[in-house]
Every structure is written in structure tokens, then in C-alpha cells.
Length: 260
Ligand code: URA
Image (cartoon, rainbow, N blue to C red):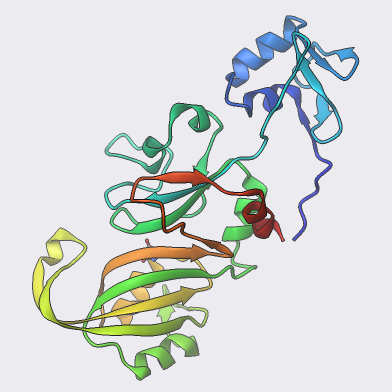
């Protein structure tokens, strides 16, 4: 998929995308006659400007803006993948106010108890591409499950025979990393309590993003997930230097690889 790079956009939206002004303040600023695009003063906030080709000045000063922002967050457990929620912490709480003003939203979801790579952006078009079932963008997870994973589990995941909500899942890949020693296993939902038994570690590759997909697929094999961390989405790998709760901006190369 190619994203058009010659897009035009409303001037108030462009100003607001810098995070320095709200959309309302941007409109007031434009109406007050302090904004020029190239040689022309623009007083209509709805006027469209070419983001690549036109220079926008405020009080004569060239405006430097980042229209689309991409952030990689190492999501800690305990945070909802949402922009707001009256009931508890959300991933946007981990982002400082300046970038937060840019209308960031999480690209897909990780469950509240899941950890790892979560992308945040205000680029709806590319986010849609990453999430669309049409494109089968791969997501790689490190999982720990109760029970001993087997070659038969790998075959079942690959065959596409597991059905969720009546529909078959796309083939998924599983690489068994380790069969753990018997130990206490704290299941993810507190109601599941604590059990003692064999467990396994694996890397799971999914090509779609259905509700609780990893947990439901593994539960269908009788191997419930008790820990899940996303390591990769498309070409973007979780930066190992990010501690849980930390984030960084994607590099230009990383952003381009998402759009490729
Ligand atoms: N699949 C799940 O079940 N949970 C997640 O958080 C991500 C994928």
C-alpha cells in the first residue's frame, strides 16, 4: 500500500498537529491574521494547504511541524489500550502532555494484563493498513502457557482448524522455546487463581488480530496463556532498551517500513 505524500490538509488541523495549539486555538490564530502560507495571509481555518510543498509562517516564523507521529511503547501490565477510561489507567497516561495533544491512539489492542510493543499514532490511514484483516500483518508474541506444548499443537495452529466465534483462524506459527520445570503458575485473571503444574514458553506468530486471539487459540488447545508480551508488529520490533512503561519515537526508516 502506498500513502500519497502530496496530501493537502486543513490549516487549522496542521497547526493543531504540532501539539502547540488546540484545534480551537488554531482557528482563532488563523482568523486573527497571524498565519501565512507562502505569500498569502490565510484567514480561513478550513483552507487547505499542501503539507509537503507549502511553507506555513506564524508571525513570520516558519513553522516546523510533524504531521504524523509514531510512538513505540513498552506497555506494562495493568494499563488499558485506550485513550481514556474513567475506571483505571490507560496507555495514554504513560505519554507526556505534548505528544498526547496530537490525538494519539493505540494501533490495536493489548489486553490489560499483556505487555510489550504497542504502537501509538495519529496516522489513521497507516494504522488502518496495519490492522486490516486484508493485509495479514504479522504480530509476534512471547507467551507462557500452562501445560506442555507439543508438535501436535504446532500442527493444529498451522492448519487453520481452530475456530473462534464460528470462524476459522488464519494459520498461526508456534515455536516452542522451552518446557518449564513444574512450578506455581499464577494465571492471568485473578479468578483463575494459582495452579501448580508443567508450563511452556513459546513464540507465537499471528496474522490477524481477533479479540483475545492468542489466549483463545491456546485455550482451545487446552494450554491457557498466563503471560503474554508482544515482541513485533509488521517490521517493527520492540526496542529492548525500553523498560516497561517507557516509549520512544519511531525512526523515519521504521515509519517508512510500515507504509511500504
Ligand atoms: N492476543 C491476546 O489474547 N491478548 C493480547 O493482548 C494480544 C493478543
